[in-house]
Image (cartoon, rainbow, N blue to C red):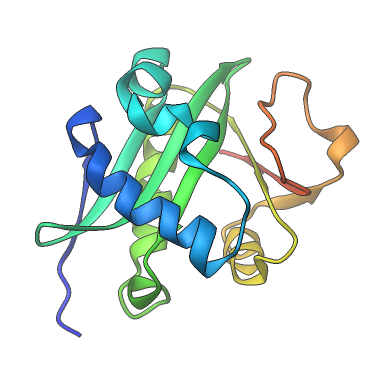
Length: 164
């Protein structure tokens, strides 16, 4: 596969592509019972992410959006990773799409002096767990997560990364 992945900040004008990327992965590929109505942030990326000190980035192969990652700034020099999705055919080391997305987010955190990154995921996403652990994230018990971490429906596995 001939790929040229480029990472850019994503704004509201990309919402149709964002929906076309994220909803099928959630609903069809992983059978997570989540709807657009339960994710109003997807329709207003700028208000929910960029304007609050976080960000939303997309990985494009040409004009096609093939991956995404978002950061919510939660204060306390901390952030929460959200919306980390990569199309199946762009996963893995061959394209490095997920790694590029995470690297951009971590670099942004360093620039903004965010030192603690948190995320929640679901137990069935074993490849995601391996990816986060390979990148230095440490699994945490739910009750050890800070009270300012914004929880999402269905999450049951939590991680933390101390950014040096």
